[in-house]
Amino acid sequence: MHKPLHKRIAPALALLGLLGMAGGVAAVSYHQFSICTTGTNCQECIERGAFSLTPDAKQKEVVANGLSPDGLPLMTKTKDCEFKDGMNWVCKDGRLLMTSVNGKVHLTYMGPPIQLEVRKVEVCLK
Image 1: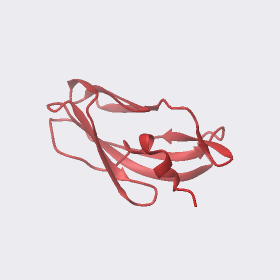
Image 2: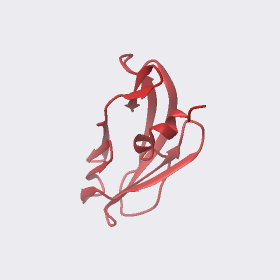
Image 3: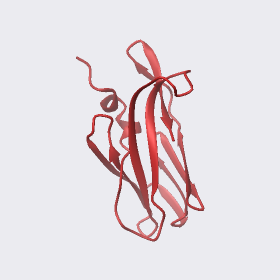
Image 4: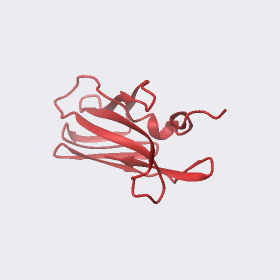
């Protein structure tokens, strides 16, 4: 029996999570992700999850907290960050690039499509 998808793509999902720590003054942003069949414009999805990002300008890190598609808690700290302040920052964590400009967070998945049995899937971020 194969492992659940979220365990096979741990580098992408490790960053995805739901409410974090207190730190420097900054906006917490809330996001959703889906694992979807490649080429379906994120419409045919296999798994979905939600997470939040809490930036901490003093520690120069972003904490991601959330739930995996099977309901397990996820939490990770990303320390590869550059901060101007709590509202303007950039972080990279493996295959995920996070950019905040004036508190508006943009997420970019930078990895290749993931092979899942006989079809390719992609990480869709909202």
